[in-house]
Image: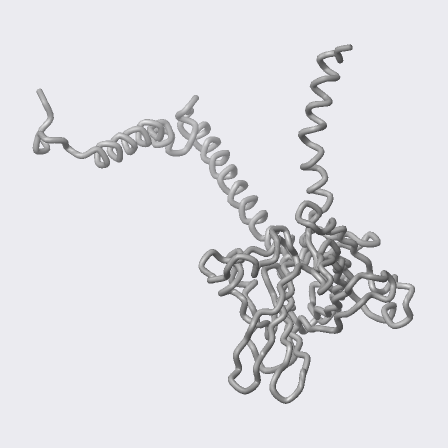
Length: 330
């Protein structure tokens, strides 16, 4: 039994679009966040940012764990970073962990393990990102309800255990409202390892001042709520997590565009007033009609010819005089 042409086309279109739609659902949009009818824009926190935590193993050794997160796009190593095969997290990772063993005597580092904490990794041995936003004030927990900001839950990562099994990973990042903090203060510089988009001048990182970084490590270990899953907790202090931050950003943009709107409006009205008054004057004083009504009518009529002549001159200059030494053929 053959399907009608329209039904067959619809089936083919659905089959082609389904993977794209699935990927779109798993995407993490950092600039358009809407929770409990409140909008947030965290795009200023985009790019790879790292937090480190050290476990002391005695007099001579320590374990150094580095967690790198990109809130707005998957992490991507630079081609010239010098990393060898197997020392990168899979593509589509959003949080990557690197465990190093450090010898305190000679300060040498040895990479023990690299694994993704979160990402859209269902096709790379993990699970879906499954990003979930929530307001801290709306939390059922007594302590969280006193805070202003957002909580983000990310999944999809995995870690190889000593037994050869995959241990699921997840992360919870709390974005705390701090009106004096952009969210980029005192961040470790990871630009040598990860690619990042160029930022505007007003989005550049704040200078370091030896104080606590905006992004801090809280804990890492087995989740109490989800058995068999490791949970990474981070805290990120930033003014863009305040519930009125988006409104203030929009108000500033409206104010900025309002100036240009008034400028264009005044310029348009001034030009219209000049043309109307000049036309009225030419009509009453000289009895002018048609093009002669307009002020500087001759100049306005010559504009197309002036433009055409200017373009001809530009083309002639670009093409040059050829091999005739500047003389044209007669």
